[in-house]
Amino acid sequence: MLAIGTIAGPLVAIYAITRSDAANLEQQRIGLEQQRLTERGQITDRFTRANDQLSSDKLEARLGGIYALEQIMKDATEVYEDPTIEIISAYIRSHSPRPSAGTAEPSASPRLADGPVARPVDVQAALTVLSRRPGPDSHQRIDLTGANLVGANLYKGNLSRALLVGADLRYSFLIDADLHHISLFAADLRWANLSAALLTGAFMAKADLRDAVLSNADLNTAELLDADLSRANLRAAHLRGANLAGANLAGADLSSADLTIADLAGADLRGANLSGANLAGADLRGANLSGVDMSRADLTGAVLT
Image (tube, rainbow, N blue to C red; front, top):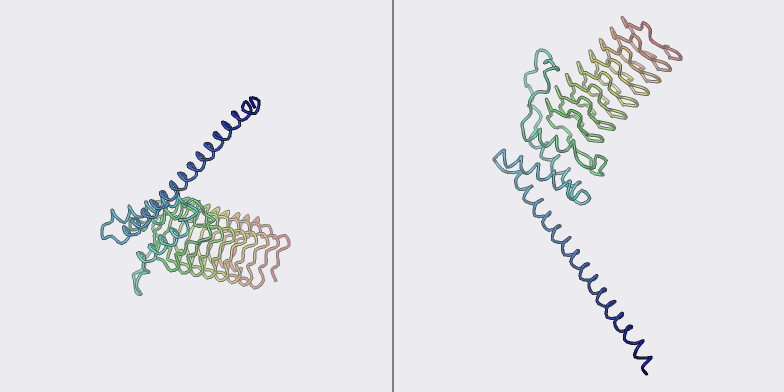
């Protein structure tokens, strides 16, 4: 009996300790769950307040709402990134209506070296927030279709995969921006500065890029069917495999550009500068080459007729 009691005592103690540890673990689990629920509720409250601020008459309140949404997007990316992108995109569209018909056009291009043309502070802030979102490859695409973004400053910003169909981006400052697979169908990009921008796979058919700066831009495999690039600066641009069929490139500077296997069929290249350009394997059938400078250009395997 003494032996049994000697053994049973420690077993009872171990059992009691195990029960106590299990109870403590359950309490910790419940505590963590309650903490998560509390934090989730707090973020929901913050999200609601930030949305309310966007409709304020006061600029300071609207700016506060925009930056509050950005912080929420960082704190709870998985849950709130997509709805935040949708809300901020809608805010930009509603606060940036396209100019009314008959709005006077500038007689000449402003000096791009002077920097971007000023935008309304709240709209610019909203654009900046979108361009530095924590998950640029989110399932929710930025939708700025038809937005008036004249003079927008998106220097080194990320609007990859965004929808800007028919948007007005005249004078916009997009140097070194990440715009891969963006949709700029029929967008107005006159006098825009897209130097060194990443536009791989961008859809820019029928876009107006007259007098735009695209030097050193990456436009590999971009869709530029029927786009107007007259007088555009495409010096040393990367256009490998790009579709420029029917595009207007009259007077454009394409010196040292890479146009390897690009489609230039039916393009208007009158007076364009293609000196030192790589046109190996390019399709130039039906293109207007009147007055084109092709000195030192590589035409290996190019189709001219």
